[in-house]
Structure formats: structure tokens, C-alpha cells
Length: 242
Ligand SMILES: C[S@@+](CC[C@H](N)C(=O)[O-])C[C@H]1O[C@@H](n2cnc3c(N)ncnc32)[C@H](O)[C@@H]1O
Image (cartoon, rainbow, N blue to C red; front, side, top):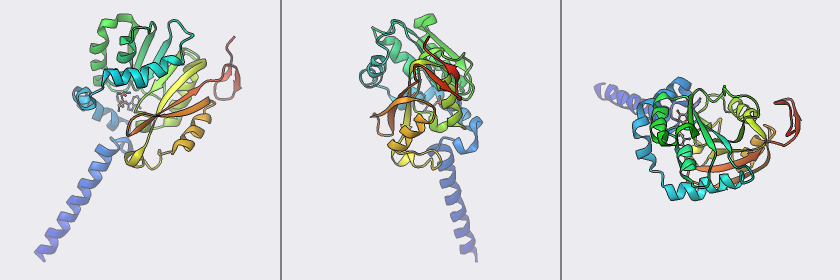
């Protein structure tokens, strides 16, 4: 009898451990609610850059140059980075010599933003940070030349609402860059996983055009889209480039 009780306990512990690993590590708290996601980032913020080990040359070549190619007609672009974390994209952009614009980084985690703020301090007013959730962007319609959101969409409680907001604050003709989680870990988010074609169609449902995918990291593709220059849309009321 005792052996069966011990075996039962072992099974319960193993299943509980696997479930905890799935909920806290693999899917980073998303199925436990936004507060859990943000809390996990708050308590790990000090380790984030060390874990990610971003390579400046790699960031410049595969992220910054392709993004700026979309903005070459704009002398000083205004960019919003949603879920900016420790300021990965603002940091790489502002270090790039021909970038003369400014970047706003938004994130729900105060601790991630503290690290971003310290790293970007030398750039003064050209880098600003806002603590806010992605589903309620505190900016007027048509404010930014580009909106980016890297390695984060799958962690939002309502990715659709966040994408509507990102499209709303983009200027007509502006560029949206988001990432598609892929691979085995991408499929661990069963309600959020989309293959390349499905993700591109998904982006188009937000009224974006010229949507295309660029393979990037082992776990992520970059996906670009553009807000139409002139559109009558129920999503954004009436906008135009006039
Ligand atoms: C994997 S990190 C990506 C950070 C950065 N974009 C990068 O590429 O290094 C995910 C970020 O999303 C933020 N985040 C998660 N849920 C959020 C939400 N609902 N609103 C805003 N930020 C959120 C987290 O705080 C975290 O900084």
C-alpha cells in the first residue's frame, strides 16, 4: 500500500512540475494573466541582457538597417517600440550613426524600463520611456513613422487589441514591424501560433498592406506591414496622408 502511495505522490509531483514549467517558463505566465507575465519580467529584468547576449553587429545588420530602409525618405523618424523591455531596439537604433530620429519605448514592466532608461541615458531626449500596457497606447492617432514590437506579441493578453492600437498610432504610410514566434516553442502557445501564411493574413485583417516575412532568429521571424497612405476604415475612422 505504501509503495502505491509513494508512486501516486511521485506522479502528482512530476505532473505538477511539468505543468509549472509549461506555465511559468515555456509560456512565461501568459495563461496565468498579464500580472504574472509582468511580474516574471520584473523579477528577471536584471538578468535579461545577460541571457539574451545581443550582438551589436547582428542587431545592426539584421534589424536596424532593414527597418531604416523603410524610413529613408524621413530625415528624423519618430519610432514607437512596444514592449521595449530593456531597450534593445532603441539602443541599437540610437547607436546607428545615420539615425537622426527619436524613439519611445513602452513596456508594462517597471524594472525592464529602469534598465532601458539607464542604458539610454546618454541619448537624452531622443529616447523616452513609458510604463503602460500594449492594449492601451497613450498616443494620438497617426503619431509614429514606425511602430515595432519584438519578441512580445505572444505574451499579450489580447494580441488583436494591441495590433489595432499599433496600427492606430502609426502614420498613414508608416511601417509596422512585429515578430512571429515559430518553432516548437511557438507551437506551445496553441491559441496564438500561426504559420507564415496565417500570420501574414492575420496582419492584413488589421488593414495593413505590403505584408511580408523575413526569417530572423531560431524562434522568431520578422513580419513587416504598412499602414495604407489613404484609407477609409472602420478600424481607424478616416485617415489620410493629406
Ligand atoms: C521577451 S521581452 C522582449 C523585449 C524586447 N522587445 C526585446 O526584443 O528584447 C517581452 C517584453 O514584453 C513586455 N510585456 C509583456 N506583456 C506586456 C503587455 N501586456 N504590455 C506591455 N508590455 C508587455 C515584458 O515586460 C517584456 O519586457
